[in-house]
Length: 440
Image 1 (spheres, one colour):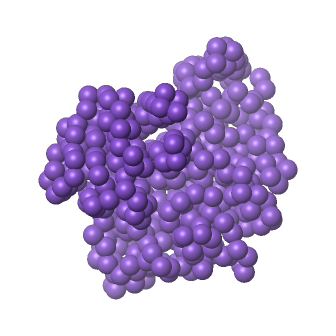
Image 2 (cartoon, rainbow, N blue to C red):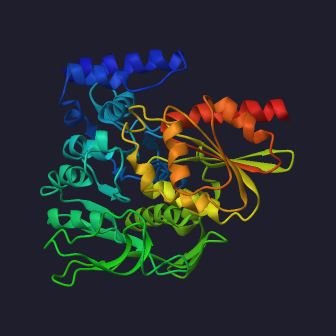
């Protein structure tokens, strides 16, 4: 059935491409014809998987660019089809009818819940894990269940795990992978580190003995320098540790060299650390890394900036409390007058449980410089209620559509921040582009 599976997948993918469409439907067809098709592929190249709650798309794309910069022919699911069907589509589209996948390197972003389907069925050279946070409870379930689904496929894995050494939820994977080579990455203590936190944290207890972990400092959420007072579980020695971190100038050092982070925020530097860990593992030069960072594209909706009449409109995606809190910190640092639009949806891809907004520090927005906040989306009223309960004293409005919300804030002379959940991101972006064109 391998031949038919590959033929059907390649044909349907080609037809969709001619129609200007993509998606995972070809992979669904391929798996229907041969559920074991991934095991039957002939791959003679490094296969790097990237997973985690936040940052996996940016990290995977930069790792793919890293190998390209080093001269490899790379296959990657850059468009973000990170479920099993999407990954099958990517690989079979690049396979010949005998199942041979010709590539110098394969870099795949993988949804956390799909690692159990991908890792055992491909010759994976390295698994990169950024972080684990509570996210989309209705789909991903409690984080403990998600992590266990990955732990269950690790006992037989004998290649490399590249793990965030500042996240106890990630470090615990090493306990279930006795045959793997472990590489840890992370960040040194810096100006943003704190000794206590009120952020939603999931890494509170030792996975080995169950006692509460102690922290020397936090970077954000439960990410930081941790140790268990009752056993030996602690932050490991970091093979790749970014130092001299300057958040204002987006710079850090490693092995005595200075690098520039292409994006904003402390969490982005963890993505850079993961890329550098891969570069070290595959002996790719720092020059290649710097070129990747220098030319990294700004992902749409990730701190994306638009300009109109001398003011900025900045669009950001939020999908869980940890990622949202990092966005709040960036906005909080802006001392200029501003208006804010928050689009909260509860569709399947967003997560139908929106209780996470009460674990997000929207209070960071509630400053005298925030003139107006307009909420919209399928749960716009819930968002407005959250802000009301949070004590926001400025102008607070709820509008039926994104366009109406933008119309409202475009009347103000201030900079504008637009915060949107997953299914609201592209509609919000399209509305911004249209509004900028109309008002420009």
